[in-house]
Length: 387
Image (tube, rainbow, N blue to C red; front, side):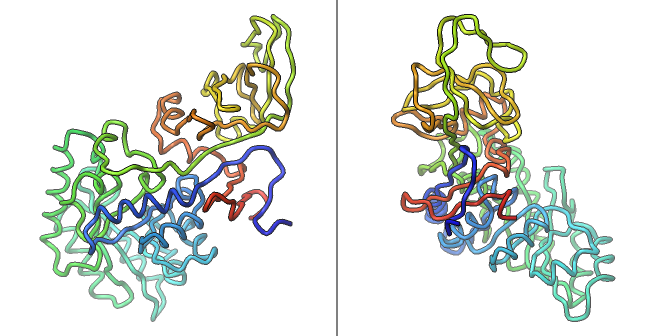
């Protein structure tokens, strides 16, 4: 077995770790020196791979990590990640012993949760907590200073709890109109003023606010989508004062090439009919890989040229119309660059009428990830065989 890892299919994603490092470095230069970076690696690092992205972000200057659920945090611990990890989502109070065991920081926002958690924490165990404030996202969080005071009192009166941080989340920081953002920021500052003691970390900025609004930095920011080289929104793209380097690409190889006659049909439903003699190539990627049927007609790159997907995308395969006979084994780029052409994640998002966040997240775990550093493959992660 190759020490880098291996896989047995002609479809893979490539993650350029140098791009992630460059993005974190650019953000760090943009911040005041005292502002720390919390690297958000939830959802398997937005589909890029949690451990490798975490290691890269920490090496580039991030000091904390954030995930959505405790399972994600424990997975990072089991992969050798020792940096502080904050769980942004709701956790169950009876799981606090596991959080304490793995030194995982939990988000809290209910007095009742803390009271129940007390019944499960053992003597001598320490649970780090960050209080979540709902300033207008309408998701999780306390909404006023009275609730904050209740949480502070419970935490202060039990030595097993350590109040390490407080934070909120902005709903519209990536929109050009800043009015709702400013309303949320003012609400957060009002809550902060009611604190009896300010904790070590105060954070509110997502990638968009980090790029646009220095007043929202406090002493830490949460770097998510921009770390992966993607713009928080298309409308704020021109406001980014440095270049972002897209880290994710998706590739496959031609596994079959055939010449079809005029009038031949392609794929389920026979929805595509050749208008003349055509060369049709098959690539081994389909909707079970996250390359969903709504991408019918999307172009891909081969030999630096755009060619269309034809017929319906199948579960494991799809077909492309070639300009001429091309050898089996030739690389096809579904996301990324080939020659002077590029298919960006934003292009795929536009085709799907969604946001760029969703695209790498939806590429399934059964698609192997190759990690590139210095132009070389440094690791291959095959989630089917490695777990």
